[in-house]
Image (tube, rainbow, N blue to C red; front, side, top):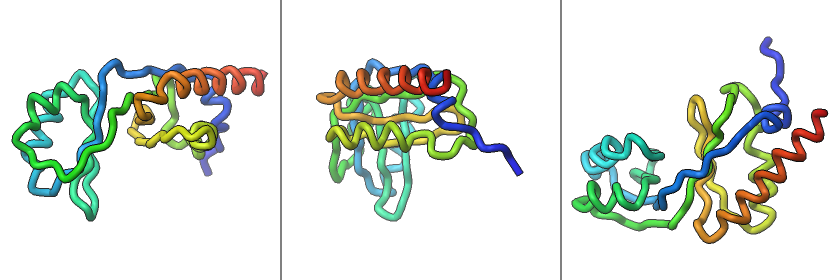
Length: 150
């Protein structure tokens, strides 16, 4: 049996990175995979995420890359603009409930924070209009986590 990892302890030692680019979530059909792959390859130094589900593809990608490499794709819809905030510290993969306390806090303040988990880092895409408030709330949360484990 694996020992439980306290998510508050992880937060107490976490730093965050807000990606500088402006991001959009693009709704595409599954036949847009070639355009999506081209855009993902071009965006290698920036955040990008693709989810394939029963509706097709959801692509979160920076505005400039999409304008340049996704122009031949037929979008069904788009949402944003977003900014992406990523964990930038050690994040054990098996920590349970890590994002829940910050999602509750942000969502409780009326801030949409869409989570996306990676193998090494977790990410939140937040509407650009809310990013300053969200960054402040996240910094406060980390400080409270530090005080809680002291």
